[in-house]
Length: 144
Image (tube, rainbow, N blue to C red; front, side, top):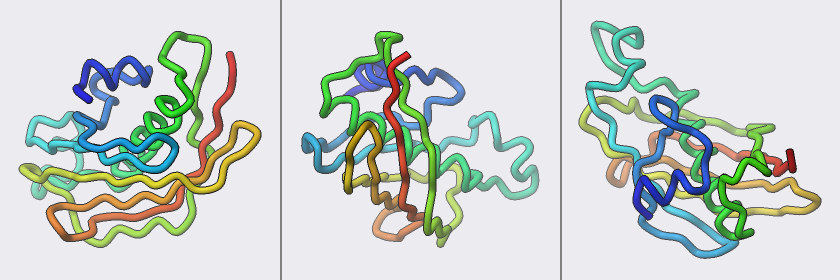
């Protein structure tokens, strides 16, 4: 999926749309998204001016956005203003490698248990073959 196709499912826009491309999708199972990290990211001037590091909370947000696309595309819900997908919980978040300008973050999200509009996901973000971060996410789909 291209960035334009991703925007059909997510309400996020620049500078808060944190995934650039979907390279693999298995309905109701898994998704693989890419985030190309550039020196022009709006958070780098403040995090940190002397050594740019992508904030861990934004890595987790990118994981949650990929999980939302997985769930919404699997259910056939586009960004039509009738639905919102909330990030409602995180467990076991671990940050193992700094993500810096020039890195491509590969985010793999696998669907876990789901029911009554709430789903659990297992997410791993890698730079190359090295794990940068991992977490278990909980998200909720709600009709507006």
